[in-house]
Every structure is written in C-alpha cells, then in structure tokens.
Image (cartoon, rainbow, N blue to C red; front, side, top):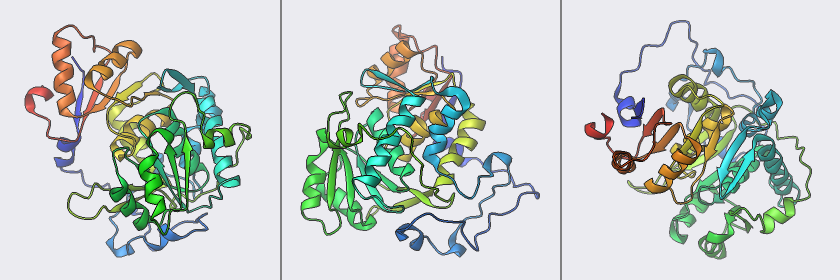
Length: 359
C-alpha cells in the first residue's frame, strides 16, 4: 500500500497555525526590481491593499532581488553537480539535467534572436505533457517572457479569450495540435505569430530547427523575484476565464514549502501523474517539484491509470499526482497483482477523495 496519502482538498480545510511574531510581513508598499520592458503584467497587478499578507522570513523563502525561476530549475542543478541525473522521461527518451539546460538555453536564444521576444511579453505555449513542452516553458521563462500554458483540448473560442485577455502576440505550439491556434491567429488583433515545435522525440519542426545550432550557453534575463513569470488561466466555470499572476519567486516557493517540507522530495524520487502541465497542479507536481530537487519526472501524453501503472512498475515511481478516480482504478489493479510498492506518496486533487480510497 501507499505509505502516505495527501489530499489537497483536505489539507486546505485545516486551520493554519498562527504566524510566529518574529515573522515580518512582505512589504507591499513597493515591488522589487523588474526586468520587464513590456510592463503589461505589472501594470495590471491588483492594488496593494487587496493583497494577502505574505510571510517570507523563513530562510528557504529569502530569495534575491533578481531571480529567474527557470535557471534555478535547470542550470543551477548542473552547477550543483546533478547534471547527469535524469530530469525528464517521455516519448521513449531520457533527458539529463545538463541536456535539459542546454536544450532550453538554445530555445531561449531562438526566442530572443529570431522571434523578438522581449522581457514581459506573454507567450502562449500549447502542448500535451511531454519533455518538449517543459523545455519550451523553461525557455520562455529564461528569455524573460511570461508563459501562458494552455490545454491541448482548448479550441479557437477558448483560445481567443485567453489571447485577447493577455494580449498575446506569439504562440508556440506542438505541431500535432496546431490547427486551433492557427485558426485563432487568423482572426486575432493580437496574435501575430504561431511557431511550431515537435512534441515527439524527433524534434523536427521550425522552432527545433532554428534552435539546433544555437549556443548552449545563455545569459538568462535577470528578472526580478517579483516579476510575473506565469499567467495561469482559470477554467472559466463561473464566467470568463481569469488570469492568475505568478511571480518567479512563487514558482520556487511552492517547491521550497510544500515539496520540501511535506513531500520531502530528494534526487532519488521519480514523479508520475496525470494532470496537464497547463494546470498549476500539473506544472508543480510534474515539473517544478521534481526539477527543484534534482529528481525525475515521467511525462505521459495519455496518462490513463494503466499507463501510470506501467510507469510506476518500470521506473519505480515514488510520488504520484492524479485524481481519486484514477487511484480507485490503480487500487483495483493492485488487488489483481500490479506492483505499486515503490510509491511512497500519493497526492490527490480534482474531486473529493472518498474515505475508502484514502484508507
């Protein structure tokens, strides 16, 4: 059986402990330095009096004024001697941290030198869960762009709302699912370029070819810790989709808090799961959390319970992110002989976790 279950729904219902008096509140009277030449996001932050109190006096949350989250998730791991560790497994290939750092650096060169990305520009990324999407997202972040990751299932109507709200001029898409975003661009007053990348292991699309001969060394944009790195759009179930802004430090805080303190992630961990990388649950659980600590993420474009079980058995996955429905199927398979003994933590979200499944 799994050693630990973690339900996001249950955790959110617990009363938070009172903050120690020694904590100092994050100063909301002014933000730190910004590298964004395009100030769209910072100009649209809510008034400071609407901000929550953000307590950052714990040592792991003391980030420098200048911080690029993508560098911390790739190049920094190489500097720490973890370059040969496997970072990503997907589409039949393994990618080490050194390979992922070089890959995302070449892509970042291409974004700036060939496609004119300026710090603060919003860049839409459209792909399923595969290593190429992770590399492209990291490249956008290294280039100082604001990533807008989108679900493959979104169609022109939904994509148009996102493009218009975020005023996106450039979209990067897996060529296998390019049609809807190309159609969006034809009628958009904002979206000017749609560039394809190959989400398979072949890497034979325009962006891949342009980046192929770029240098593997890249001086990432010195973004501020309070620069927006990611726009996460809500699903719009209660109206129009809303863009939630995430700073560079926010991307690291969720790892340095939850992944470090609750999950206890180490370089020996192997992650598996079903949430799309376009959702923050998936981006955190299948990219940020493992990459922050030199662990391995296995990525499945079709993350059925059967496929996740195969990954768990093959790669001895230790941490799983999925929904209760999938866990029920996995438990049924375990009763029939599936070997899930390597799992030490199962994180659940997306629907209520029934007590029988939790137990």
